[in-house]
Length: 597
Image (tube, rainbow, N blue to C red; front, side, top):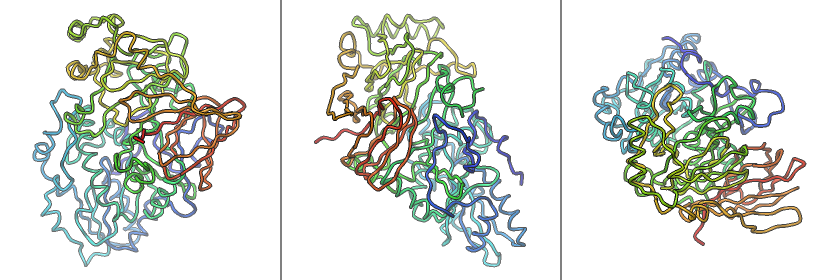
């Protein structure tokens, strides 16, 4: 078998997670790209040799894992280790028992929308639907062979009485491998174009595999990080579960990742030295978009990333507190950056209503957003709401003409542009026309859904590959709220800060969100320290002004965070102290879910 090397399988400017803390940049950082959580000594192990030794002690194992895992690499590397030990292996590969491509295409097609659509509908399929299940189930261990291994996505479906080793893979790495042409969709032997593969991953593969992951979580014995090549790090899952429990009662930071875009800017490159400075721009930072973020654990210097899903599957009640029953295993709040510094305007856009996103796309919550201006230049602005004299049919006709002719639209005839200043807070409930103008660094505090952007006008520009960006005028006009216009925009869509409480050297400022938002925002301003109670709510926080801070949670956990780093205090932490580590006043944004009482 051919063993792929890291450089040949992925297309990305961002490097994969280092396998060891020794590979991290050793200098004073103003932003950590690779936050990790230590779980004690001798809990994370390196490489196939140690994994093979453990498999030898078990004799029969199932190696399951996520989409995009390089199963041929894993089997070839383990086979090499077993040959060193003069052991014969009986391999049962789940890929041999998938249904034919054409059958799987027919299964998934109802969930993919039209070929020219960006969106589909979240599938109701389960992983078993992709296999010739009766034939797969008939495969049993060979009692005459020293080692028996069932391997591949869905290996747990073999139902052997054997421990499961799960190879996890972060979704951004799946994307990079997809772009590199090394992986395809579940049950697909050929490659489609990038947009079609991503749509199928989002609406089918990831949904099916997350259900499977949740179903087998209590059967997993060991877990490995499938992104690290050529030698993966791995751990006993019990140690990881203990680590997850610790995070659910204290504080944690997810692993961020970054993406270029047509309108992207230069602020992130200039302020985060570890980013690839040769990338043309960075439009987004996935600070906390939990369907695609991971959590990193460390032991003996070895790093291992697992998906955020595992935390929610195990600890959703501790994390979400009062709202665990409402949101189940979904983490409902999203933090990300939109960087337009020396870049371009975002598209003129809106997001779907709750009913629309549920009926059309199978989501449970909708994409209600807010823009917190973390930094900006003097000429920065935000497009939000309509002009008082808006005529929807005239606006639509001009948008359609622009789409068909390539002519520019004088967008401010229809949409208001308000000046933006540092710490301004703009409210964007679903149905609101909006866009971030150039020369902003926007902290987007939003509900978790993140791909349902209906673009009406994109400044007649291509994407980074020179291709037209999708325009969705019909979807947008099915959702636009034309009552958000004129003076109402400043009254209802620009948050008015209010002092909630204060002490000797601290204040808590309420930044009210719109009634349609299910989350709220406060800003904690303090010179030395401030004590905060969670009141059984999850808090998502970021230092938005200041040089650095430390946190102490009620269980004695301590951590430190830099400017612009996102961190989470779960509901079960009960209380925490924030400590200003700089000379100037610290300002910390705190987002949390609203309660009815």
